[in-house]
Length: 477
Image 1 (tube, one colour):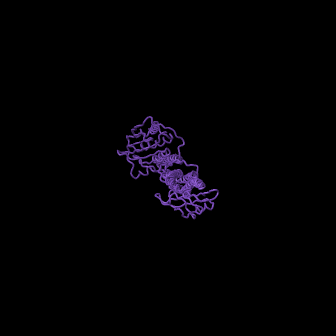
Image 2 (image 1 turned 90 degrees about the vertical axis):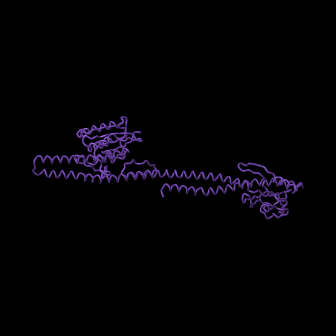
């Protein structure tokens, strides 16, 4: 499982563990709080009714039939009272009265008959003992099984306990209140869960973003690219990234030195062998013409070694750079004109025609010296592989925020076997006419310059003959 998903699911698990029990406790506590509020009202009501009944008993005018008629009228009344979102339409309370022995004297609902023994019910039993009497029973209704609260109060006449009055109320309205409260709580909990889901996902993305940057950087290095070191945070991930970068630099430095020595030794071996062979032959007696030919060969191979070493030094300086030291606007027409002037002698020697199609206001961003080297190599390749009196076309355009520079020649196509190796170090094709090869470092240098500028370089065969080199570079801004 990916790290981001692990972090995401861990956040969800922590949320579930930390909020599941409090959520269940809130629901249970909500039920108890509702019941407490109902019971508190019933206590007040029971004591008020008890005082009224006690007064009528003391005055000798208590009549169960008259009281029953009053309650019948109350129970028969229909009304509409909206309590927030719950509508109440009738009185659902029950009142019953017992004597000091716990026998029923009055029941407003007629559930108990006169004389029934209620002395064993907790509300009556405890009240007769001088304690607080209350109980809960179950009843079935259209809403399902509901609880009925019973709260009792003692009937005192002249300081003497003469009976018990109990007020009973089913939890129908309370049940509706709780259902609506739970529904709202469910919605709030759902919104909170959705917020936690989104926030957990964002946190996972935020935590793994520097890791993904570091991974992409490692893949780019593996592919041989020259990416800039990614911006990381100041956490342990940033420290790990810095450690990886230092390790990469150390390993690349060691590997580069080994590769540099091996390739340089390999490439110098051939011209050195030619020089040594010519020197051995010069020790022998020979005519002046032959001697001059061998001396020219030594001079040529020495120049080849010099050019090879110089190119290797240039390439080494480029490969050890991870970013441009200096960067500024470089007018492309002026750059092309300077490069063509430097190649003017070779162009005239081969009687080549050069045409340019450049926007005069086109400016690119980069290091002018390095860009001159890159473009000079491309033009030199075009000159070397062009047939006598051929055409070299240099064009430029802007495309998707980048400058696209192309150099076309009319020479032969790149062979199929060389397509994949054209940018390899020391790989070179024989020049037409002479059959000689270059150092094989020019196009490699161009690729390094393009990479440093966050650009690209490609070479492909043109359909009408010749080769096109395409150099893409960023525009200023």
